[in-house]
Image 1: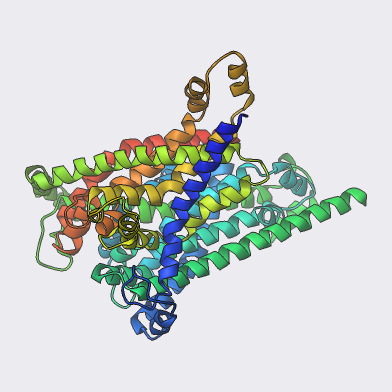
Image 2: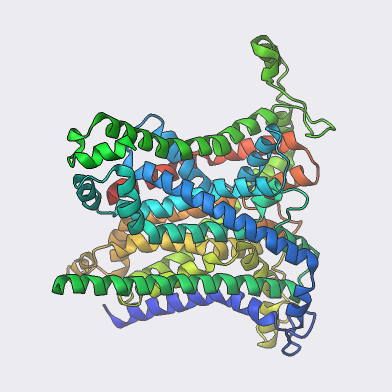
Length: 272
Length: 322
């Protein structure tokens, strides 16, 4: 590898990451701005965070969003894991092509189409728009992402572990819960987190499927952004970013300690 | 319970399993398939049929604001007579009003240009990551994925403060003397391009990286030894080998970008025209459900080919992994 080539590589990585992170950093920095003008620095202040906690509408929306996120992510994780098992384990059944199409299409489907079609479904079956409908809509969208994440883990899964358990007489369901599930658990956990963040994040589908009393945080932020950029919104965004960042850091630490533990176990097994 | 005891009492492979155990296994596997299948049928496929149905109905001042068509309540004869009442006015309306046609064309063009730009920005990053020392690659990968975990809306919002006339970019450029007049970027197509490239960059970098990382680097060295200049080695070896990543990345950016709503709405302003926003306004501002359904049907028809290519590419990649 010659020197200029690798310098080009380093520069493109640095510029790329600067492009990815600079806007987020600026957003966080200006949430601590004293001035009401978002882009002119007027000194350090945390007053926007204080006013944020007195904003009743925003706090209510946060609570709705958190509940929708937890419930839809949990249901989506169960359904998505089943879908992933179907995709990897049952290669031959009638309608498999349709099934894989229905799993992959929502990943790229424009949100306006998904949102509109789900809303029309809820109206057709006479379901009032509100908390339940947003949760159902988010479950449908996010289960496909969970399916993809879990599926990629299942593909590399060593089936001989399962076969060994079954040869020793464990029935399939017990084999799944005692052997398969613990091995694919990290993928299921990251699938849940992905589903939760997607639900936390979604504006378009929530706007279509939600009704009075179930305004989610992105809907609230969006309606305020349309009125103009305010430091209070910056503060709200910063808190959201912090929550997600803490979650991701904890998840990666847990993963790392599990990895270390696994290596220790393996060494112990080799010595023993 | 009998299935469990039967299975434990005969520790054997599938051939030796007792009938109840086989039955329960069959039942469980049936259940594993059926539950997600029915969910997706009901919440993903059926809604599209309803959208199609409503796109053929008439607008009405009621709640829901459309006249019912293809109603099964009248039995088969009622259904057949209902076929005569179908109206394609919403589709005729879409072809007559140049606004919709322009919105479709503009959306496809904007999405295509943004996809090429994202590829141009993403390729060097993915290439640099694939060539980085193996020890720091997981960290780089993590850094690419991390912005994806922060809200899409927030990341688009962050650009408003940067791009607006008195925003940070203009302040920087004016202070450094590069420009004397603030650049008008916000509320133009340029802002939409920036927004799409920025928001969708991880979707491009990840598939590119995974195909570039798998590449056998000795091929490049062999080409170099044989006197092939680096640029032509890139076009003859690296690029063709990364083609699956290029295709996956481009589809992951292009398809959602065509129907994108948040970016054109927040960064594009009222001067720009894109179909996702047209659909949104038709639905929320004009409350015209049949027309917005027709807009969605046409948008879906536009995207059905790229979506099928995407699905086949996914299925092929999965088979290769297995």
